[in-house]
Amino acid sequence: MKKSFLLLSVILLSGFGMSSAYAHTTVYVEQYEIEAGWGEEPPVVNLPNKVVVEVAISGEKEGLRTGVTNAFKAMSATLISGGAEKTLDINSDPRPGHYYSKILPTKTGSMSLKIQGELNGLPIDVLIPIEDIESQSIIAFPPVSGSSSAGEIGAVKNALSSLQKDVSNLKSNVGEVSLTAGGIDIQNAYNFGVFGLCLGAAGVILAVIAMIRRK
Image 1: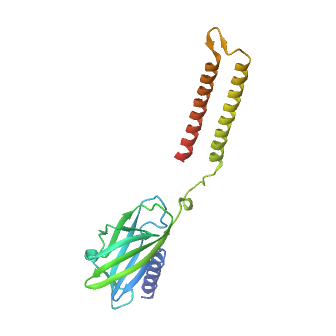
Image 2: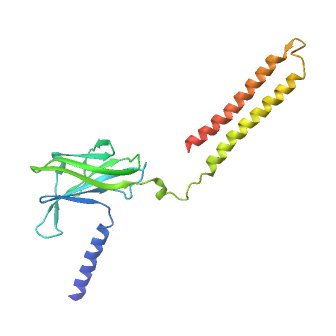
Image 3: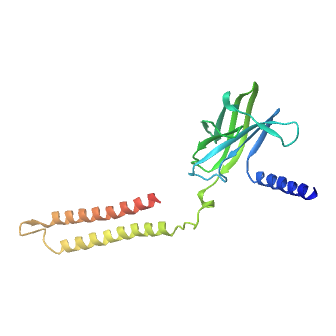
């Protein structure tokens, strides 16, 4: 009998320890408990996630709760980030009293969930803070260095320097001959040469910029 009691105590304590690992927030409105948070924690920017809500009615004994079905029949849920708001489409989880809404966080920072309406005739107007959106750097591995960007900027500088040298060489070569020779306009040849060099350098620069933007 004592062994069974000890085993049951360990199971209950383990369950409480697991539930405390989730960064969900619970508010109480009379006999109702409304808990909100993220389905995947920590929430990370640009990774699909979902806002989860549990609505339950407190039992006579502490720790005993009963999930409320159709809780959002007359309630709405709005996600708030700074001055931006988004009304969520609430879906029912197979478990009674559990609800969720898919979301793609696009910006780091704090968020709150506003729930308004009526719950079985009881007016509800609560603002529940949920866990902050984190940068992808907290899960990224290996870390991304900035050396590649520096190298690409160096490539642009090298392309411009090469263009300046080529233009100088072309100008000095043209200056050594007369402006016309055998009916060919050397000045026009010079202009076309400079134009061609400019196009080539511009192509290199645009290619490097495109590489930077893709990252």
